[in-house]
Image (cartoon, rainbow, N blue to C red; front, side):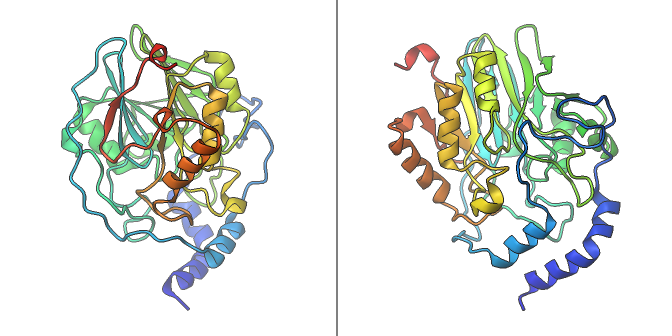
Length: 352
């Protein structure tokens, strides 16, 4: 029996006690709503979610496509210090970490510069390539957006570095503030779905629904709220989806906000579908989301950095290309940026 299977068996026996005590989120306390029952948060639509036994079934039966152990790569160029009012630029760092520059502000989504995304330093997913932008090459970071509390999206060591270097505002879903406070990061702000926060005189952010779940350990599932973000300013609308399965939220976002200039959508960690589909769209689902949003331009993220699912390292981009071809959507409407690559987002009027 391989070492990994031995460790999984041991985790199944001792994990509940260890995980609950050591790593669990404190939990949100607040008023009951249509997506919070007083103890746990819920998606907008009922869905068959997978549990720990399903996780073990997947781990023991998985067929993983090839990934390289490590890919050396030079970092991308230093991003501009800022962009002017009315301009929008995105730079793909890695995984779900995107630098969004718009209307004079610099915003980082789900920042991860750590080598491993895990509650412990000796196990868990490790990166297979360096971040596309060196930490020291970042422009001044004004705002950090955290879509949910999973370790590959809310990396506390990276957040500590960013707070020390840049003193940004940190904005996340309900209940996340309690986790960050316990980690020595007290100055964060929690939002409920559709709640708005002003980032400046002309720029605001809205926390929007997603179809996912939250947990830091085995006994705190759905203690905090997950979601995406819509940034609204003179340059238009930028949408960061975070992790999400399919659902009505893409259509709802279009109905509430109108034309999206840039949609940042996940395209990785989607196989096997029986396990991943409730919480992760695949590339074809990302194309459908792009269409439902009525977005002008989109970019893919959540791929190529951490081997979190069974698809091969290069398959998300290939499957996205097939889905775009099948929908007759030009490749320049849905970008797959290189790690460290930045691009100015075209205004809506420049797209026929």
